[in-house]
Image 1 (cartoon, rainbow over the protein chains, first blue to last red):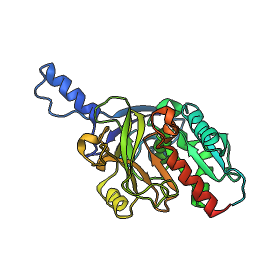
Image 2: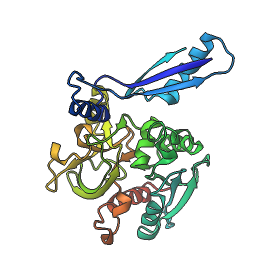
Image 3: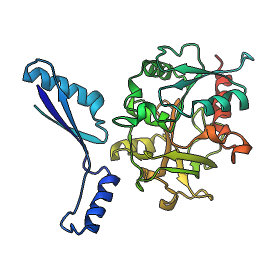
Image 4: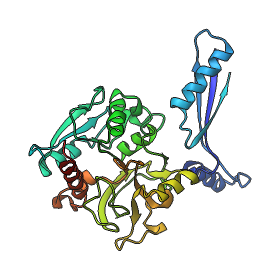
Length: 78
Length: 238
């Protein structure tokens, strides 16, 4: 089973990288882009297990390592 | 006081690169019994204090300090800190303490998106820690910083708690001690350069006191932290 994990900066946490990218896009003429927020995407391959078990495992993994919940939110797609 | 030199652990992780600087400052400048402790070690029982030095542990993979927080020695650090032992995390050491949850908050990239390696001024906000007891409040220290991820962040509630309990130990300031936005090198909330835990025995700071412990290095201000800590240990007794 493959899972996809999205880790994003929480609302209100400064994203200097996203800001720099937005400015660069603006220099290129992409005036319609008002904000960019940079996050992480992880693809995880899991052994044979049920969806519920996988969800539980990944929630735990996100909380303990994959995301820093002080500054980041995460979303799991199974 | 036993008359023997204080035994201080300098933790070494894969990717630590300020371990020898810390060892040198403690052993050769301050005559402490400094010892390197590999991150696989599970105990700090024989030590009087622990230093988590700077560097790029595990190549800063995932997040700074995210891998190192899982090393066996960090379990020992937690137990050591819980028992009241003084722990100082410098730069990457601070980042590791944050990731391990031994200090509140987190680090994000510098506002400028630049790695900053420079001497900066920091203001001592409290003498009420083992590391600053010999430094008067409001004293300005000249210390080097060298980091990309030194932009300290904590949510409003955490920050209010830190301020209320006097856990902000150092703030970036100008040479005269004014805490201004211009004196903030990295965007840290409240110009925060260093904080301690509620029990005040765990200090995390981005500036490098071990790199400025001798006049030959451009400043000896950093030595005052280690002198304070060693004096505190002597007075506490073993």
